[in-house]
Length: 159
Image (cartoon, rainbow, N blue to C red; front, side):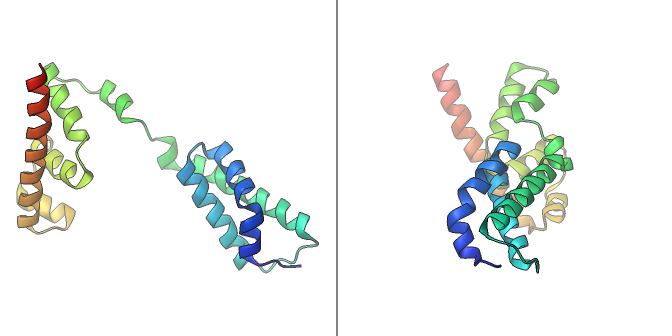
């Protein structure tokens, strides 16, 4: 017996998501697990006895995939920015505040600012690392500095 993926998605998606979320404890990972589970169902050649057998198989696959997600290197070694900040040593409170502000910038500006000021790469080296033109790196540096200036100006005015 085989059912269409669309019909199974309508009837099983929420229970598969709940099972995956209970293991992953992350909505995005659980959504990925559910999607991968339906892909595996679609590509498998297995014949099932009845609808209950299909549902049990889907849940078992989702649970196994969710466990695999929690075992990945990146998942096991991920730490929050707050925990990472505790491991860093700054010379002054202002340096710590500046670093926290840099880490709150949008990614494309944060990366170039970090590479330029904290890792001491040149504009040309950053362009090579990020596969961007030098002019694009300069624009991102300029915009990132402007964002930092605005945020820091507000904080200084509030003090």
